[in-house]
Image (tube, rainbow, N blue to C red):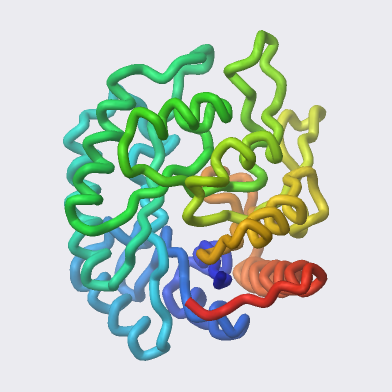
Length: 297
């Protein structure tokens, strides 16, 4: 087991991401948005070639690797109405970059569902199946995240997607169930239960995202907390995973100082960086309380 993090929450620049990773004593980054001097920030699979070359160079100099591409492939910003050419182009850019970096995992999703949807459209399953096939054929492993997407509508929907897409594995996010309705249950849909979701996908989970939250009815949104201090069942899930021999990445995604999909949640660059590092240290302490130590990626 090793620790990593979605490092754009420490800072958007590759320099800040490397610095935070090294300060924590970690050796891997889960890469999502990256900024290189002279270029606009973008997902790792969307950077211009010269900017990507610079990322590769800096990572090599720092002795840091990319353990997972946090791609935008079929994410919550896209629907099944989005032309499939957009998705295939992202896949086509991600594959050679993953191969160049020696990165095996790529986080994907399954498109944003309609507000009242309670079923996965066959077209969504078909597209996830094709994307998965392309990555597997390239020797790479796609992992689907339970988020604001068709596979994240409930534990049952997750299992349906996994059954319908051979070779697909899961990246489990501990807090996402807190703000997602369980669309497999009678209306009005209740919020999902993180522990129930975990039990349904733990056998096919290849990567874990750690964030924690409490649902705030007044805001109709989640309030994010330090790991183990919310309702994400972080301690229970991590303890269960390790007891079952989990030996892969545990990745922090604090969401306390910055939220990737919510521009309203912002803070200074210094505060974001400090929050990320403190979050990582608190996760290490939580693991230490369980008698678990992290290896190196």
